[in-house]
Amino acid sequence: MKIGIITDRLGLDTGGLETYERGLLSGLAELQPQYQFEVYCSSSQAAAGIPQLGKRCSIHPVCPQSTWLRYSLGLPLRLHWQHNDVVHACFVPPWTSPRPLIVTVHDLFPFMQQSQLPYSVELRLKFLLRVGLRRASRVIAVSEKTKQDIVNLFHLDPDLVRVIHLGIDRHYQPGSEDEDSSTSGQFPLPERYILYLGRIEPRKNFGALLQAYRWLRKHRKIPQKLLVVGRIEPWGRRELGRLAPLLGEDVIFTGYLPHARLPRIYRRAEVFAFPSLAEGFGLPPLEAMASGTPVVASRIPALGEVLGSAALLVDPHDPLDLAAAILRLLEDEALREHMRLQGLAQAARFSWRETARQTLAVYQETLAQ
Image 1: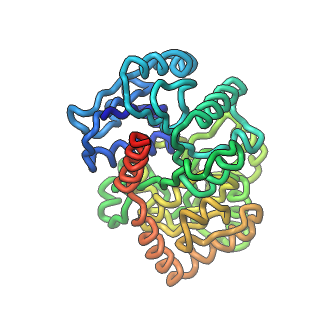
Image 2 (image 1 turned 135 degrees about the vertical axis):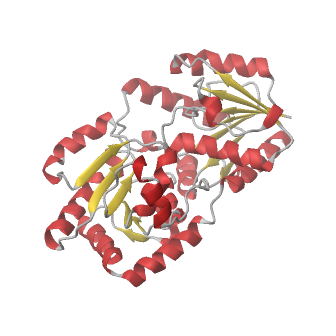
Image 3 (image 1 turned 90 degrees about the vertical axis):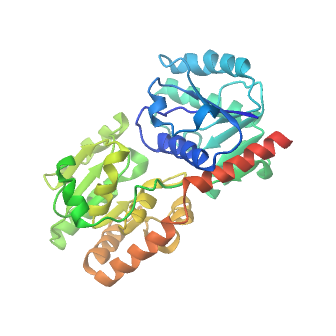
């Protein structure tokens, strides 16, 4: 049997979507299923991000110069030529597929709230997702919340939608101070800091974290810096401009960093704060837990599903609630150790091997229909 896997971000070093594509392929490599895999990618550099699947994996860059050409012409033509038995789109599906189609949906925010994406990108994304989901033989949702959104918005049969959680890379794990100091030349970290990792855009609610941090610095005189790791989206720059009075030398922006540099940053943080207003899954707080760092996160459906009782969950609309939870972890050593152990246990439930195993079951179910 031949499985076609459409990747959109592999090899581009761009964050969460690429993490999923790379993680799924690494899980498939570990399981070594008896299928032939045809991986369609948007970058000629994608091969460097694909784990060794031996002779049973072929890599096909498709129209890397143009996203529009890739989805309108390049992918449909290539899929017709390759004669796959099943096609799995890891993010955006092509407008047509000659074989049964499986689509992974990470979230449906462009359909549910005012989008900040460029109009042409939003239009293409909505069109391809709408057409792809209506034609899909099976849909993979990354959380129960995302499944509910798919069923409610597109009126799909719930039995056709499978919930498969994401996994965590194995290099996220607790480390010793000696290990961290041995790699000190990689990045000049503050001595003590609270960490935020994620995009800077309105739905990530970074403003609430800044307000909470300013309150802690002013009223509790905490010494920790606020370390901000992640890409500042164009529509996030407007928000930062509005928040300029809350910035200062104690708020440190690194910009986007490749995943290989993140484990040490997670491990060295005293608290990881994630006040997002909306998530399809929420991978960064799980990565922080796997690294042994206690987590404060928003009390929203997807994060509650993924993090359980292993994080302190707060009202994302209340900066004082966020500040109080951060302060509890900073001041209460017993609570901090308890949440650290809870987080490690929760994170251990998620692996790319399990993600791949459940995805293989969807392939087999689709082939058998």
